Amino acid sequence: MVARILTGKSIRGLINYNESKVTLGTATPILASKFGLDIEQLKLRHKVARFEHLTKLNSRVKTNAVHIMLNFDPAEILPTEKLQMIAIDYMNGIGFDEQPFLVYKHEDANHPHIHIVTTNIKADSTRIDLHNIGKVLSEKTRKELEIKYNLVKAEGRGKEQLIAAVNIDRAHYGEKQTKRSIYNVVTAVLRSYKFTSFSEYNAALKSFNVIADRGPEDSVMFQKKGLVYSVLDINGSRIGIPFKASSFAGNPVLTKVESKFRLNLERRKEHAQSLKGIILEQLTNASGSTSNQLVDGLGRKGVSMIYRKNNEGRIYGLTYVDHNTRFVFNGSDLGKQFSAKAVLEILKKRETQLSETTNRNIKTRPVQIPDYSFLGDDHAKSSGDGLLHFLFEKPVSDPGSPLMHIRKKKKKKGHSKNKDLSNKI
Image (cartoon, rainbow, N blue to C red):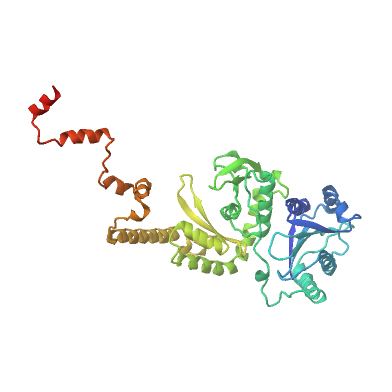
């Protein structure tokens, strides 16, 4: 079992995220603890009100939302009752046994996992210290539960091997409510992906057909640090109306996005090498000779390559989104050989070599006249491939044609003009 603890500043946003999954049919609420009602009896307003009552008791604490994910091995079959017991024991182990919490079973990945939503604000208005809770309490509790419930141990298996890449539904205009689709993508990217600039943040969003826009640099929106989100169509163009960042639960405004840049800068360093290996493998692949083939090859390895273009459509940069580790890198940050200039030069050279090879093969290839005899005359004349053959073949005489009557008159070479005239008198 692998446990992840994330903290935030919007309990409503965490509830909305999980409830949106329930609406989509990819999650099920399975437990409500310290709510006074069974999970089936609770409405959305009950869930939000219960948590907000506690958070308002201590408004000075800004980080008051806790989101816990317990991930299990893909081979494990865990009935709902067992997941409920694991969730209760886990929350007891990390000191949240007296806190209200909701448990959702998610089915949007290839391994069983549950999400737990709670707050660290207690009924007496004090807060539970979250510092080092993962190392001090969560790890100890995790190991105990693995033994108690005979779970597959995370030790020695590699945590990243157990947890699949985040499964985020791409936004498609017209298929679902547009604002809800954008919200799901933005929330998941902000929570799970590590980026160090606005362009890297946008690259992660574009992987799921969403874009964040600050407006032109000389606009009022840009100067006031405004931000809107839009859906992208299959061509990468904005479609539908944009939505202000402040209109979404969780408030994914520019200042919140920028607050993650410095922290993520240190976190991503250890993941650069693995991404370089994936990119080099595809760049040196014999089949990766075109831009589309390179993009497809990287996509099969769980990496999105996003072109950055100016207003004239000219490419000036590359950004790589590694969905395996959920870290985002500008090409130049990985090294000169991964920059837009270097990659485009490689692709141009490959395409030139491919073109020269194709032209050389055409010049050396012997000219062959296709044989359509086995198809029959009618097919050969009517087929598209036989058009050239039809135009150059000897015409077939048609006695009923007016042209053939004229030709017959011209062929009477043995008669004189006078004899012809006398015959007509």
